[in-house]
Length: 212
Image 1 (tube, rainbow, N blue to C red):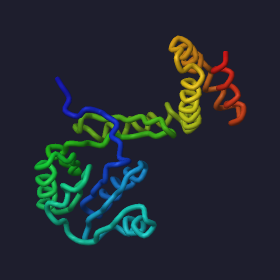
Image 2 (tube, rainbow, N blue to C red; image 1 turned 90 degrees about the vertical axis):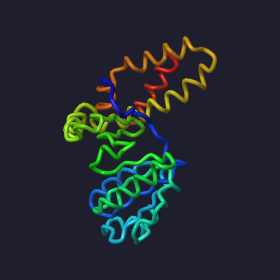
Image 3 (cartoon, rainbow, N blue to C red; image 1 turned 45 degrees about the vertical axis):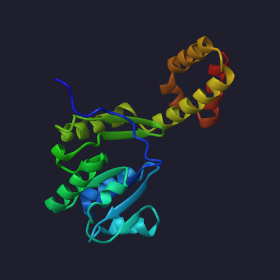
Image 4 (spheres, rainbow, N blue to C red; image 1 turned 60 degrees about the vertical axis):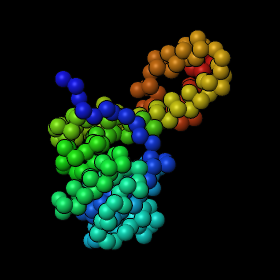
């Protein structure tokens, strides 16, 4: 049986985001967006205090009023979490009319986009999703992944990103040597390195792997 939602990475760097609604659920979605390089606008007559705080700090733009159709069509991604079902339907209708991807919270039938349970370790993102059918299971699995990918994986992810940059600088036109260096990197005892070595020692090990 084919699934409905394709897991993809969506850049928010040049994609403005609209959140309709200002309650606790909207706050959770906003705090997810804040982890990314995104421009966020919130439309809510009575926003949560923390949403107002984020606006004061310049982390988002807050329009303290009701939704005005068809303003959602101006954005690149929309999340609607209004307590008013009629508002959510209006936002959904406006988005679908022009193809703007939308997530209507707790209403999979009105979603083009669903949010997986996410674990971040620097540039490494591990996401678990159930095609919108059992999000509680995704949340449970995320807790398990906390143990599979402890916080020291942030250092490994950062080192891997730096390694890749150096790799292409050193072996620009030598794919065989790049492949061999990547294999050495992956075969290193990272569990011990991350546990027992400091940052400088780890960077020295990465350079050794690159030059071996």
